[in-house]
Structure formats: C-alpha cells, structure tokens
Image 1 (spheres, rainbow, N blue to C red):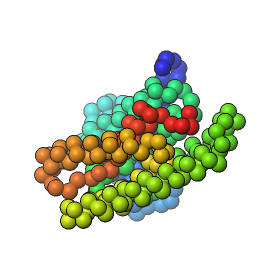
Image 2: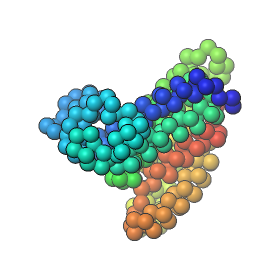
Image 3: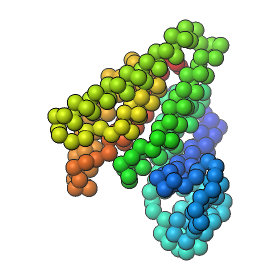
Length: 267
C-alpha cells in the first residue's frame, strides 16, 4: 500500500485526537462520569471539560494536546505539579499506531475510517479490563453499533454487487454464532476447571466480533484469542501473582489483528 503524505498527516492528526478521547473514556467510564453529555458530581469533570485528576483544576487546550502536552509539561500537571502517569501518552500512541496500521493495510477509504472510529473504544475496553476486569456494556455496544454502521454503509452502497439482505443476515448470524459458541465454551470450561472461565462481558464482545468478522473468520479469531489468552495468562500470573486474569485484552487484540490480516468480505 502506497502511503501519501497528506493522507498520512490527516490520519495521524485524527488518531491523536482519538487517542486523547480514549484516555478520557478510560478514566470516566469506570467511575460513571459522563463523557458525551450530562453532569457529574462536584469536583469531577463534566461531559465537556477535562480536569486534573489530582487538584481538579480545569485543563486548558494547551494541556490537552495528545502526547505533546505531556512531553512539554514533563509529565506533570501545570497547576499542582503532580506526576501524570506515562500510560496516558502511551495509550494515545497506541491508538495512533493502530489507526496507522489500518491505513497502511486498507488505504484512505471508508473501511479504514470505520475501523478508526472503533479503535478508541477498543483501546478503552482493553485498558479498563486490565484495570478493573470489566468490559463496560456501553463501550461494547458502541463498537457493535460502529460495526452495524459499516454493514448499513455497504448495504446502501451502489458499488456493492452481492445480495445485500443475504450479506446482513450472514453477519447477524455470525454475531449470534460467536456469542453462542463463546457461552458454550465458557460453560464447558467452567465445569472442567470448577471456576468461572469466561465472563458475560466477554460473551457480548464475542457477539460484536462476529458482527465485524463474519462466519468466515471465526477460526482464526478463536485460535488467535486462545493463543494470546494463554500467553497473557502466563504473563499476568508472573507479574500480578494472580490466578484470575482478564480475557478481554486477548479478544480485543485478536479482533484488530484478524481485521487487518483477513480484511472483510465487505471491502
């Protein structure tokens, strides 16, 4: 794929903004702080403003430039000088790399933009699951809506020749199949291991993955998820010294990788 400088600049700028948005989701969603609209408790950010999590000072636009503000401020709040964790710029950079990966594989087109729209929510789900071992319903639902939006885009696209109703049915069936299969595997492993093997949030994410990947990609998705889950569980037990580990990061990474490697029937 040939990368064009202006396109690359647009993708990078958009990805930096999406990365900043993702860090806001990571902080706000587990704490039930509004991120789209609404009000919040005193001392917490509203849907429209960001504040320092330590001194609660409202952040100016200069404090919110992704990655560069953290570097310019040397990782400290401008007001209270409290250290800002490096995970913030690292998360933003992760989103940028993921968006650039989609652009490098698929180019400057609608499919890339749909994937980019999902990436900040996927990144937020990954980090939140690492921190809290939950996959918030609202974020999983949004990733599913973006996937559905892509289906509708293709459905009404005049350049697409496949039977549109058959197409939508195929991907809806895939979502149900992924969810049903994951529930069965979780139930089976729970019986064998005598402990919960798969959370219901993971089952819902499987359904969303099916909506994105379709039936043809179920095998690579399951294989990669299983392999990454094993690797991650070993690392988690070594680092965290805990037997229970979040499976969401393996699922999220697998969805992204399979999307890039296998593409979509909808391209």
